[in-house]
Length: 337
Ligand code: NAD
Ligand code: UD1
Image 1 (cartoon, rainbow, N blue to C red):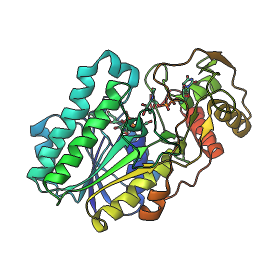
Image 2 (image 1 turned 45 degrees about the vertical axis):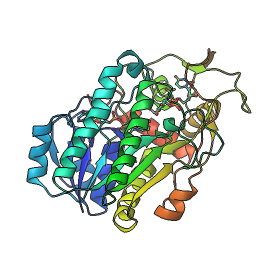
Image 3 (image 1 turned 180 degrees about the vertical axis):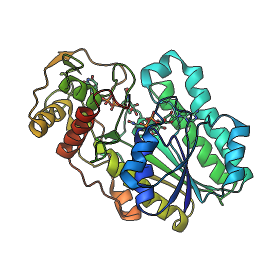
């Protein structure tokens, strides 16, 4: 199939492009490089031996997007392009609603115009807000967002559901990711955060490589076995494979479908630190700090639906995730620079 990947030079997008190329799909990437680097394209070539057509454009630009669709007939769009920093979204909500929501609307207008009606969207477990039960199934109520970033995901899910209701020739897959970490086994692509990492795993790897002194663990008085928050960490390559499975499914299982992509295992912050230390042999100095606003206590997936309907299960365990994150960081101490 010929696939348009928006945000394809980003963290999850680049890993998905590799999996798509390795399973024989043709890929065109659209990315404005606002949070990624063009040299990812060389790395993708080094891994797969395949070149990908790349457009350095913003999905909000109608004319530029129109040009891409004039040049190609796509079977499906996998839509990753979006901004994802929770704190930044609180400080600059207009930017987030414009980039994520307006950008998606523009993409949908063009897809509609060119009769490309298959879309896989990067949603997030954040849409569950404070989850009503654990593990979280896809039919759990969508929660109240805790920040503008989360609301952009809730809004886009709503837009896509309404679109499907209006015209059931659309085939839409909403993939709700849990906590993506890890990197490609080759260490050629991985997560490349700007400035101080907000997320746990890149913070740990930056402590390990000597860029940061000490990890702050946000809260040790939660109602969990060791007092630290519990999450469902998932290897980015497993997540990427989930998109390839969803693609197979989108042409067979028509309609609007929602899947959690997680492992189904809850791990605490201390579990991650200890597993990282065991996998790499590197000690991670840490101290307990106050709780971070907006953190939920426990969050992990029931991933049964993805297994039954997509034939997908996560294969990497937490040790693999820690080791691959570390190998990426060690081999690329300054990311793609
Ligand atoms: P990322 O920032 O690494 O990748 C996103 C890519 O989109 C970047 O390359 C960026 O340059 C590009 N982009 C952003 N706005 C654009 C625009 N207007 N036009 C063109 N390109 C644009 O992030 P990621 O971690 O790979 O996340 C991919 C998607 O998955 C995002 O939509 C994110 O919200 C979602 N998601 C991520 C996580 C996570 O923890 N990483 C969790 C849940 C959902
Ligand atoms: C966060 C976002 C979520 C987003 C996801 C992916 C918040 C509240 N949630 O999820 O919306 O979809 O990232 O980008 O920001 N931790 C520390 N020290 C650190 C960093 C994190 O103790 O330096 C803890 C956190 O308190 C949390 C766990 O580690 O308990 C995981 O944090 P993180 O990696 O930021 O992911 P989430 O908060 O689950």
